[in-house]
Image (tube, rainbow, N blue to C red):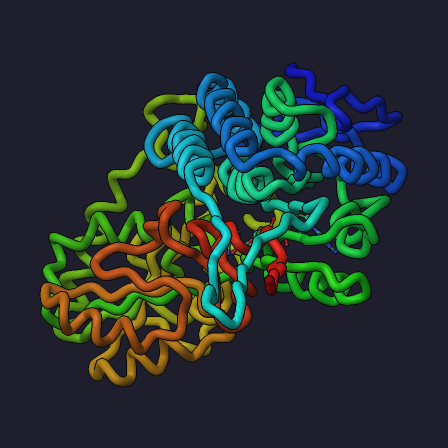
Length: 468
Ligand code: NAD
């Protein structure tokens, strides 16, 4: 069994108790994570606050060089990190799995390193000069979920460092090990206290809640469920923390009547089933026009039924188990309910342990639980429609607004429909393809603020305007 330590102030933190982290493919213990409480959180925030004074005073070039060194470290340890992710998260090493996740983390870290927020001159004339400066905030509290533990931690940590902030990161109790190792690796090239990690089992003590009210944390960047995001927002009010909240989605895809079912089947499948559907911006509802409904269903099922599902450590596996029992039970409940309302085209019955086969259920409608709720798992509902206006209305009939997609052979027609979807990202003939140079965030209940690109970087700063 591997050993994992939390890093606080550049050193391993000594904690009295720990908790087990289980491999979702086998139920076996992968390792143990420190079970920390308020004292450890206070210690981590205190060293991060102390480190901020010198870290934020560096030149922009020095910050950039440090971020480049961090990026190189992640790349150097890519294989090791991918293995830890597979063991604790369940996603395969292969395919769009853990190697791909770490590759993404390196790409994002590298791109973020190259970004900058130079001083903007708003006015320079005989009446005076007005400059807009971006100032780091202080200690950033990062709270991450269990679906992409390393990539999301990098999405939070790198822009914070790049803009001169210091960080305390708290991973999900389901997947803390890869983050413990990530922070240890980062500390090989960073001054003590710049990036720290705290872990806990969320039972006796709620670390995330304590971070949200901590007076010395200036911003929370949170990725997780809508319900927890709302709690973070409430808790953050008393200390007027800055917030970036990347929350849940219930993304709709709309297939227009002129789409080619064979050509779109693979994209539809991966749009919905990437990371076993445990992806914020996965396609979670699919609206298909009546005239090609059956052909799209047939092509999608034909593609899906050949995807190998198994233990992620085996190279042959392309999808793994559901990550945890709570999520497995949710998917099981939603699929059981959908069976009585629609027609199961593929899968539909839970497998061994936490394995659940890719499941496709047609004949569903808005109002059915699998359509209305975020399933966050390998089960896609298909809704037949005959009027595009109706499909747009049904797609927008959701409290969420993370992503959406339109599938068509006519790009202009697809873009016209796309512009009417109430969501932060919309894709044509693909779904969920995010990239580091494009801001990403949700509208409506899917969150506040954006990540990535200059717009995302700016969220780690306050504006100071200098009038000279
Ligand atoms: P979750 O909300 O249960 O947990 C997220 C994190 O919050 C964990 O680290 C958890 O320990 C912590 N937490 C628990 N209680 C807290 C509290 N009271 N205050 C502060 N933090 C607390 O989410 P999850 O189940 O880990 O992740 C799945 C959800 O995340 C899905 O809804 C998914 O759509 C969403 N998600 C969104 C994005 C995005 O970018 N929009 C990306 C990935 C996942």
